[in-house]
Length: 105
Image (tube, rainbow, N blue to C red; front, top):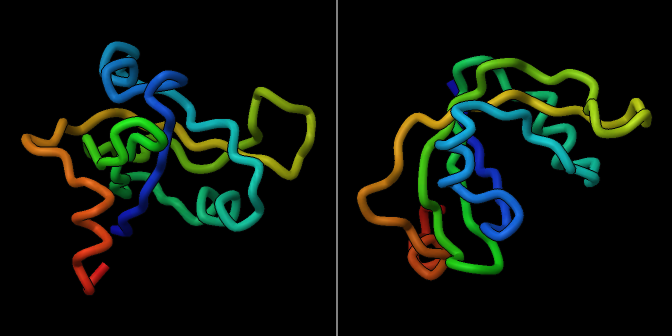
């Protein structure tokens, strides 16, 4: 099982919204390297859910429940999505400063 990091600005799509929705497709990726990572994700892989721009911290863990398929928000065939669902909220978020301070990361 691989582990990945996904990010979202909380005002666009937050951890709390994901919990409320129970499952979603992860869309809006328009970077080829990130797209390739989405294509590499397998069902059951865990992802760290990171709040960017506001909070700057990993707030929860999600799981891939459906592997990459055509992004339904665009007709461009270059872009894909994966379906995710929340696993658990972290008791204490892990900040960007903490991540940068850990040489293993």
